[in-house]
Length: 208
Ligand SMILES: [Zn+2]
Ligand SMILES: [Zn+2]
Image (cartoon, rainbow, N blue to C red; front, top):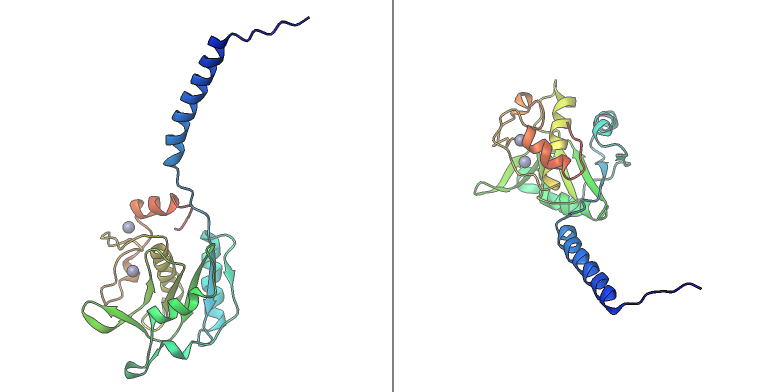
């Protein structure tokens, strides 16, 4: 016959230990933030050359495995800003966002000049725009150097992608997160600096 000891004292002690373990465990878990890996979706507009879209896609695929290249779509007329013959980047981002979901980041590609309200100017021409954070961004080939088109489009794409992940502008001159400040410093940019790279890798990205 098996005799089971049910001493009340032991029972209370085991409950107390369990409670202690639980108390230690819960605060530790509260600080863990899980960043869900998002899929990069490249969305060219119909004005963008299919060859260039393929080139951006191939380069991004190396650092964002699983990236998707979608069929081109027409630029929305609602984003057109007639006084400057430009497209409003913020309107394009809003429009693109409807094509994604919580697990995606869309990168719109156009050759048209794009603009936003910046530096006190109602309509400031830009090379790309992405919100901090966001689910869509837009890149324009209009202001990039034509002989360096491939590399400059890639740098712009990862810059805007960085913004969508919450990365602000960076003061390091060679960093992809440098602010263009109305110019085109892309040829001076060589990679993400160590601090921007760490920010991105903490969120599951391996951008180079
Ligand atoms: Zn920027
Ligand atoms: Zn940086």
